[in-house]
Length: 255
Ligand SMILES: C[S@@+](CC[C@H](N)C(=O)[O-])C[C@H]1O[C@@H](n2cnc3c(N)ncnc32)[C@H](O)[C@@H]1O
Image (cartoon, protein in one colour):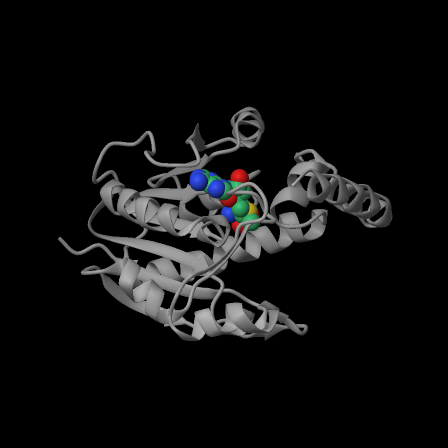
C-alpha cells in the first residue's frame, strides 16, 4: 500500500508538470473562477481545470435533464453525495433556481472545508466512510452519486444504498453512475468471470473510498442491491474517445 501511495504521488507531480500550460490558459479565460487546489482535482476527476469547470457544468446540465423527467424542479432538496471539490454541485444553484435547496456531502473533510469557504448557495457537510449522513429521514427529493460506489466495498454498497434510501422521500429519485459491462476490458480473466456471474468485482489493494480502490457493478448485482425499489432507467455506458463511460442508474424509492 505504501508503494502505491509513493507511485501515486510521483504520478501526481508528473501530471502537475504536464498540465501547467493548460491550467494557465484556463486562468486567462476564466480569471474569476475560484479553483480548488490541484491535488483535489487529481484525486477526484482528473487534473484538468477545463474539464473540472466546463465538463462539470455540462454534467450538471445533463443531470438536470434526467431529473426533470421525474421531478418538477421547484421547492425540492437535492443532494450530491460524494461531491468532492464541487465539480458538479457548484453549477446546480444557478441552473435549478432559488426555490431548490442544494446540498453536498463527502467523506474527505478537506474537500468540504474548501467547498464551504468557496462555493455559495450550497450547504455542505462531512460524512464518514460508512453511513450515516447528517440529514434527517425523508429529507431529499433527489440524491445523486457520481462515481462513488465505484470506490466502495460490497458491505459499503449495501449500507450506503440503505442510507440513501433513508434520506430520500417516498418516490424520491436516486441517480448513480457505476462501472458496468463496458469496463470489463479493464478486468482480469478471473475478475471477468466473477462479473459474468453477476457478482460485484472489488479491487481492494488500497484504502477504501480512494480513487485507486475500484468496484465494478454487473447488472444483476445492481438489481439485487436495489431490492424492492424501482429501477426507472438503466443506460449502459458506451465509449467516449475509446474510454469506457459509466452506466447510469435511476432508482425510485418505493415504500
Ligand atoms: C471519483 S470522485 C467523484 C467526485 C464527484 N462526484 C465528481 O463527479 O466530481 C469520488 C468521490 O467520492 C468521495 N467518497 C468516497 N467514499 C465516500 C463515502 N463513503 N462517502 C462520501 N464520499 C465518498 C471521494 O472523496 C471523492 O470525492
